[in-house]
Length: 504
Image 1 (tube, helix red, strand yellow):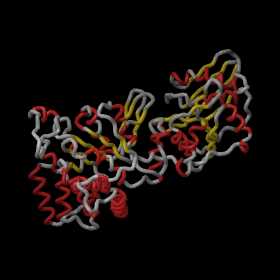
Image 2: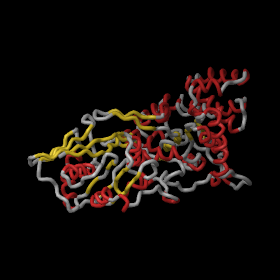
Image 3: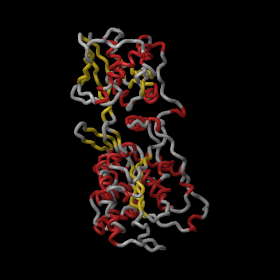
Image 4: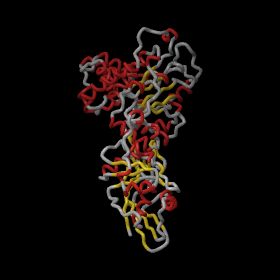
């Protein structure tokens, strides 16, 4: 006898449909073919024990299991459940129509279902492929139920799966989480810009960054508030849209971090340590796991102590900062992962931290300063729109003042500016294509003359030219201006030419 059951394999952050075909014939051996990985080859031992624990029997005949497409390597234990169901169907112990049901789940020896990674990706693939029912472990059901248009059953054991297939009306469908249980990014601790006295220019730069989606670098001495200010950036960012939340949650689901996420909340804020490897940053491994830049998708990647990261790690950011995706190529797979993040970085100006400090003497040699700053390459620096010098905070600046904008107040302004950009061009200013820059960032003669003078004086690149214009467009939007004025352009230039002070 033969039977066909359907499952899905996670590839990158998406899933591919897998067909599990089982044929039982005279003989005594069990075989799995179709390029199975080691964990898939081991599944027959788990499946046999789980079937017997469910009060059924494993066929004492030749069992041939083919997993298609044959050219796609199958990894992970998530195929245990579809293999078990296909064996039961082929042996006549489960005589049901399974053509519209997709299965995923790992089995323990006593028949309990264990969660799989990438439940949202699997659910989206099942819906797209035309399946009307998805059966998977209980732990995966809340995130899977976010996807509409398909019935999701979260079950605990193989026995429950069989009972559900026979009498689905006896089981409740999994429902999307509600209230505090919603799936999306976990709320971060509430840090408010109102807690910081002084540093008004730096707060202004952070607002420009959030409003236009511009990458930002803060450089200044220890204790000037760089990290404190950067940690408050998520509090002024617009909340995730429903589409963005689903996309971001799918990435976390693939990375087996579903317990860290909640739906329709603040954007992801990733802070990898400077010892992170290039694989930890961009993704990779076997099975393929998203790196920090993908976990920061639709959110913020904050790199504190930027020069302390390995140079190879920093250079790996260059391509995703432009393309908003990262391509991972290995011998066994090739995958494109999303990486549309806002880069926020902070650093000292030298190893001791006091180069060009107005009140303290730097103890570093010129050569050590040069080596330290050269860790940040020109091409990477060129991709950072806002390069802001953070001055040391005087004691008088820390005294209470009459009015300090709260994060909530700044966030409202950011949202207003963002809505203006979306109405005009459909994307944030940082994402403007060259043709849209020409259309929406044109300059009057006086502004154009100033811009040419600056470009020639500082020998700025064509990329810098475009990024300054995009920042100026954001500043004009914040002011409610239809055109880029002289003040808008001047401020954008002042927030870009930091490399002339340090990186020469």
